[in-house]
Amino acid sequence: NEAEAWATLLSDDEDTAEEVLAVYAEAVRTLAYSVRKFEIGKRRPFLVLTVQPLPESISVILEAEDLKVVRLPTFGDEGVSVPLRSGLGAGRELSWWSKVRMWRMLQYTSIVYLDADILVVGSMDSLFQVGCRFSAVVIRGLLNLGVMVIRPSEEVFQELVRAMPEDLLGDMTDLREIDQVWQHQFWTRHKDWAGEVHFNGTVPVGVTKDVPASRVFFERTLPVGESVSEAFCTIPEVFNFCVTYPALVSFSEDYHRIAHFLPRAWLDEQGKIEEGSAGEHVGRALHWPGPRRKPWQHWHQVARS
Image (cartoon, rainbow, N blue to C red; front, side, top):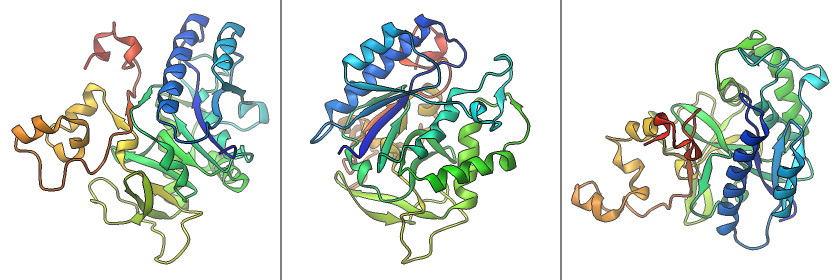
């Protein structure tokens, strides 16, 4: 397991005050605790990625809990231009570009990345067994970077860097998740989709393209019989289930997608259980995406669900 690692990002691009970073550090500690609570076998390294120096008071707490702080260079340090966020001041490179840096962590054969606003409620270990170069959940038609499985590759890193000037137009943006839109575009334009990973319990047993087109649709698909090692896969949304109010509203008429998170007795009472539909999966990770919708921001009306 030394060649496998968990990873997350500790940052707040809009407020870098120590007290704000301390709150995110608590979120990271909670995430790590939840991951390790369900981890099977030998403990894997847990990487805390950051592009800014952390106050010693925070670093000491993280390292005392066996979390490895990894400070990464910015792309600006290397002369690579990426869009900056409007309103954050000149020269401020958004921290989530550092997710691309994981492709260069060649000391690891596989990295499972989780955003800090995730709470793990079941084992995620099976993701390390997925054989595709890149895997993620599709949410609202896009590959969501909140939970990713990557198999580091210098070749993929260089491809991503070369694609930046071509795909990312302009040097400023108001779009909060431009990195997510861009990475979706990169994988769907330049790589083949091998299919959605199918799990038997906690073990991935293959991929299938038999997925509703309304949820997952890619024009480029991997030809039958070819290796999935350089392709990208999608994974079931139980590994990245969004639980903010807007996300739950979107499921209001789609009970089969969230049956594994709802009490069976309630589903039965509502007549929403079909034969064999409930209990096929076990929810693994709850995700609170979006600004001001985090569990630790409960004093904001918008954060309440």
